[in-house]
Structures are given as structure tokens and as C-alpha cells.
Picture 1 (tube, rainbow, N blue to C red):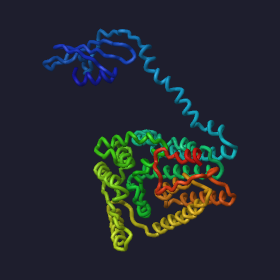
Picture 2 (cartoon, rainbow, N blue to C red):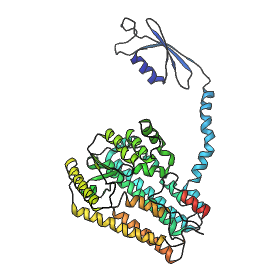
Picture 3 (cartoon, helix red, strand yellow):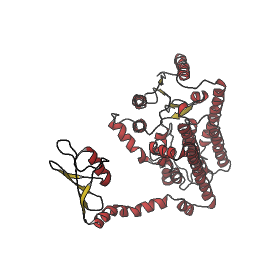
Picture 4 (cartoon, rainbow, N blue to C red):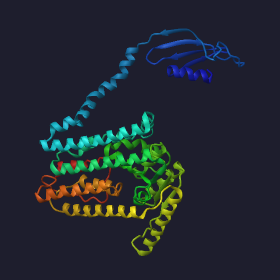
Length: 444
């Protein structure tokens, strides 16, 4: 069968089985779900001349008849696995539903706290969706969803809030819900920069602070951000990206975060930007991953080189000169210009967050602790690393400190019958992050 006819047949039916003769060929076309349809068409002779082709260049079909097949049998066989999954799917949807949580709440106050942040999270997402629709149009929305399918994982954030909120009440529950809400609002702002201002978007590695980039009037996209949030919400959602990175040559024993990021870049599921700033941190796999990313993006890239022994004056001076060179490089390769007054305000914002966080940590030292878990580590992970220049991050920490102080003054522990404590250095592992809730409920 010649290429044009094969394309036509496959587009019509999805599959084709052909027997070739010297002058014409019989195409036996299998139509899924409808048995076999046998059609004889005139193709191309061996000498190159055409047979049975009308003036428009289309093939003509004749002698078409249908041979009935046991369609229902195959249809039912295909639907059986779906029916078998229905009980489990229904149970899972029910367990993660808003109604199920409200019915299982210990008291009205707990239900109202969860309901408040459930609506707040979805209101942010709906508002942003309408903003994308108005600015990019229906075609733009479809394009965004096709190029960024991980957005559907982010929509499950309220399911995560349900996991984090199990058996928690009062100020502790509100602080956890508040931390997740800050992640939602920060993500929306990051996506807004990503979708609406690609001409000013600078890609930055997760250990490169965004302060200078924002002080230059540029938008920053922390490339690992989605790879951090996705496994927190749905641990299995990043497996396809890890496989993609390993198939392209990354070591199987490398950290899952750089592999997730590289896999997303290879698949074209992350923005490109106009320039990129990375560093030699935090680990060998993380630093090496930017070799893949730089090759995939083909955009101007600057690598900050943090000295190995950095706690001395010589190392500090070397790195200061490196940062100054980076600023000059960004001014040369992007439309941004350094605004030192704006940078001063950003630093002031970050210092205020640090003051509030230290106050929170001092209160958490008390036993039993007034707040714990996600209220502490998730607040730091997002508001200190991703959105430190946002006024909302300062407000978030002020609210978290207020809730901790309230519990401390009323001698209200975060966890009933606190027995054990876990010291976490840096943000904890991202997969199955509700393990802390489980540990509280199981061991105290």
C-alpha cells in the first residue's frame, strides 16, 4: 500500500491489513468495535501509473461489505477492569472528599477551619484560571495544559490538606492549613510570572536566591519548585520524569529531585526563560543536572561558584566578586537593571521573616510544643526559599507566630500526649510527607 493510502486507511480505521497484487491491492480494514470491513480500492500499478483515482486525486472504494463480529463480547471484556476498579476508586474519592472530612470532624470549629482553607485554596486556583483564560484565550489555556500537565497534580492540594489535618484541631490545624495556603498563593504567583512574562523570565536553580533577580525587575522561576511540590502532593506523579532522566543517561542512584527536574525539562514541561543562573550547589547530582538543562535550553547561563571552604574572609571576597559579575552579566543578557533600593527592601523583608522564624523556633523548644510539623518545616521550605521577598510571606509568619504564642499562653499542646521529638535538618524528604502526622497519631 502506498504511503498516501496507508495514512488514509489508518486515519479512517486505526489499523490496516493489506495483501498486495501486481496491479491493485485489497485493503482489509479492521474497524475497532465493528468487526471487519473489506474494501477493494484501486491503487498504483507497478509501472507508476494510477488506477481508479478520480480527478481530485482521491481513491475510490467498491465492493464494501461488513463481516459481523461478537462486538459486545469484546466491549464487555474491555470494560470489566474498569468496573472492577470502581469500588476502590469510589472509596478513595469518598475518603478524600470534603463531606467525609466534615462528617468526621471532632467539633464544629475544626470543620470550619478546614472548610475556610478548602475554599480559599480553590478560590485562588479558580481566580488564576479565569485570569489565564482572559489573557491567553481558550487556545492559550489548552496550550498551557498540554505543555504543563503537572498542573493537574497541583489541583489535588486540598487532598494533601486533608492528610495533614487528620486528628489535628484548633490553632495547630489552622497553622498547617495556613502553611499549605501560602504554598498555593506562592505557586499561583510563580505561574503568573511563568505564563504572562516569558520575555523577562530568568530561570534560577533552587539554591540561588531570587532576591537579586527580582531587584532587577525580572521575573524568576525556580526550576526545581514543581519537582518539590509534586511529590509532596502525589508521590507517584514524578515517576515518569525520573524514568525520562534515567533513560537519557542520569545515574539511577542520583537524587530524585534533579532527575525529576531534568525529566520535566526533556519533556518540555517547564519554561525556558531568557537566561539561567545556577551554582555548584547543593550536591553533585544537582550541579551536574544543569549540564543536561543547559544543553536542552540553549540559553545564556551563568554558574555561581561557591567556595568549598566558605567560612573565611578570602572566600567571602571571592564570592562577592562572583555575584557582582553575575549582576553585570544579567544586565547584559536580560532587560533587567539593578535597583539597589528595591534590593534593600527585599533584604529587609527577608530579615523580618528570619526574626519571626527564630521567635517561632524558640517557642517550639518548649515541651510540649505549641506548634510542630508542617507549620514549621513547610513554612520554611516555601516562604524562606521561594517567596522571601513577598509581603504575604511576612504576614504568614506573623500569623504562625501569633498562633504559636496563643497555644503557649494557654498551655495548649500541638499534639496530645507528646512523647517523642524529631529534629529535622533542612526540609525533610518530600515523598509521603504526611508521615509526621502518622507518627504523631501512632506514637505521640
